[in-house]
Image (cartoon, rainbow, N blue to C red; front, side):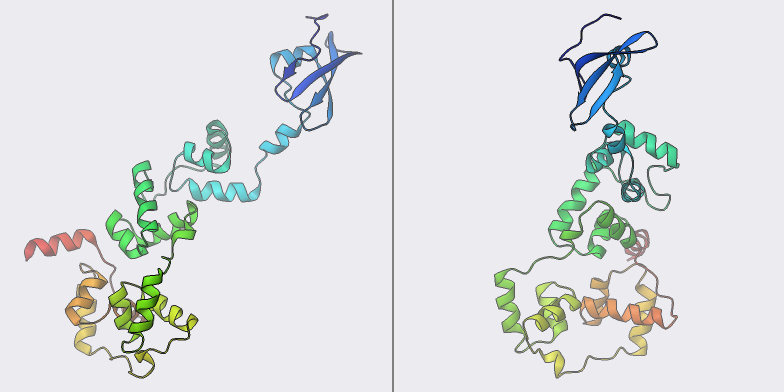
Length: 275
């Protein structure tokens, strides 16, 4: 091996150019050209055994940045090593090794780990314009888990459903006679989304002229009582109100310190079995 000629041979990123007069542990040291353009001296033994693969640029590229570590922590809550490796452009072994070094475990104790089928379904629901509440109900997860998954899995661009030309035309016609709440119900949109779009188009709706109907004490008691096992849509139908108004009123009650339970699919099944 001491006199072996490796001229022109490539070892990962290094290409052997010519031998030098230097020796390392009895082996000839070769001058090599790295793919990045730098020169590197390496013994023929280290090159053949794969101990030296670049001028040092490969090691720098493999170093983890603070942003990558932050992404790793987020992604580890919702997906596996293979998916993380694909998103970060690294090998599965690299992801697994970095997790072990930092003590990061897959999955979140508060949220069960996402399977590949769930992630595919999750993306479909987002592209369909479903709200966080609808996705959480459909996938039997908390709204907080849905929001975190959108951020961690990079689906933030799908969180707002785009307005079609037909919807915009319908919005302009409805704004002449209907309130924002009524428009939201007809177009199956969130109240805030409709209000912002009306402002952007300089549309004056009836909501500017007709005050919103206050909630009665009886309605308050009803909302507090059934919120655990009825969705906002179901409550709105019972009280003849819009889904957005129910959601906004729940928020106002919570700000006043009144406990309003979140919807529970398990509770809903129980109460439905009694009816």
